[in-house]
Every structure is written in structure tokens, then in C-alpha cells.
Image (cartoon, rainbow, N blue to C red; front, side, top):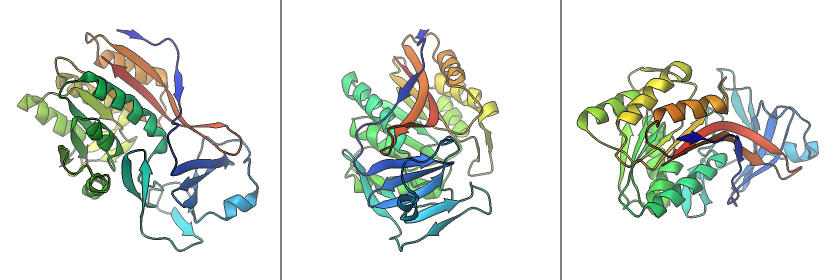
Length: 294
């Protein structure tokens, strides 16, 4: 296996229902469907490109970060949730108490990449999606033809993901919906001899499992990846690792993914995910990633 010598920035290009309208002064102005919102963004250290009026017309602003004092302030009455789409995928969007909207638009770059791999494999595939949230990666892999196991510690978001499956018209596709701690689940799968051809891993910096299991990315990630390696099939196809808001480099992610898939051949690439703003055409970095293709 040979790691890529350069880091890559991935920017999705297929969105119609989402736009990064502007960014600056530690915030970003975005359109989700027909509504615009202002959310905190520590990476946006520059000045906004649009006049203040454009920002003032947003339907909601998330004030604070994610602590107990943070909250949404709405200037317009909104429906509880509304449908959005990305190509053939449909899903529900809504403001949450953690400032998220049910979709991370920059991850569409991963959906396109793994869709091409799954469709090109021309064989039955088992894909494991860990920390799977509202399931858009699950739906992309499922629509491409894979059987997917979707795992998240939150019963609420797993239900949300299953609703997205129905909205996308993919309810006949085989998806296992699992509410569980990621490491414990993969360990059990290993003991059962269950093997996977693809892995999608999008861990939080810090979190708790359904029974209070502690997750800290810097100390837990290596163990999780080792368990995934033990559950890899004889012909694994891909592994995607995405990390947000951590004191790590894409090079660090590339190194640990390369270690995880050592001996399997293939290629590791790494870099940043970003969205491009409409106002000035600037790239707004959102996450780091490393991914391996066999």
C-alpha cells in the first residue's frame, strides 16, 4: 500500500437543495431547502462577502456553540421539518439542539465516491456504517446496491434515518438498523464471524453509548479501527474515516487508516472536506478525512 503524497480537498458539486451562501466573522449563512440559517463556524476567520441584510433575513440563528446556554433564535415560523434531496436521495431536515440540521452537505463527496466503487464492484457487498446519524451515507450505499448495517447510539436518530429511507423510496432495500455502542457492536460481529466489504466511520470527538459507554476519539479510534480490520472480508472494497473538530491532522488520519488496512493493498488518500460559498467562491473547510480503496 502506498499513501498519497499530497492532501486533497473534496468539494461536492451535486447540490440543489443546499447552498453555502456566505461565511465570515465566525459564522456561516446557509440555505437548507427553502430556509436560510446562521450557524457558528470557527474556521470562518475572514469578513463576510454579503451585506448584513442578507444575514438578518435568515429564518434562524444558532447562538453560542453547543453548551447548555446555546439555543436557536428564529425570526420566522417554520414547519417542524421539511424534505430535502441530493440527486436520488431524499431526507428530512430540521434544526436540532446541537445546531445540526440532519445533513452534513460536504459528505456528498464521500457518497459519490463510494457509489462508484459499489456499482463498479459487480458483486454482493456488506457495508458497515458506524456513528451513522440520519443515514444519508447508508442510503447512498444502499441505493448503489450494498447491504448496509447502520449503527448509532441514539435511538432517535436511527428512527430519523429509517424515515429518510422511506422518504427516498428505498424501504425495500436491505438495511439493518442498530442502536448500539460502535466498539461493542463491532466486537460482537467479530465474534460472530460477520465480515464487511466497506466501512463508513464518522466518529464524534466525544460521546456516550446507549449504556453510558465512553467514547473519546483520540484514545478510542485506534481500537475501533482494529476491530473493523478484524471484521474486514477477504476482498474489502473501501474504508471512509471522517473527523470533525479535533486536534488532529489529515496526515494523522491517513497514517492510522494506512495502518488499519496494511497488507490489503489498495490506496489511501486524505485531506479536507469543504463547501464552496456562493458570495466569494471561497472554500470553507469543515472536516478532515482519510479513505482507502482496495
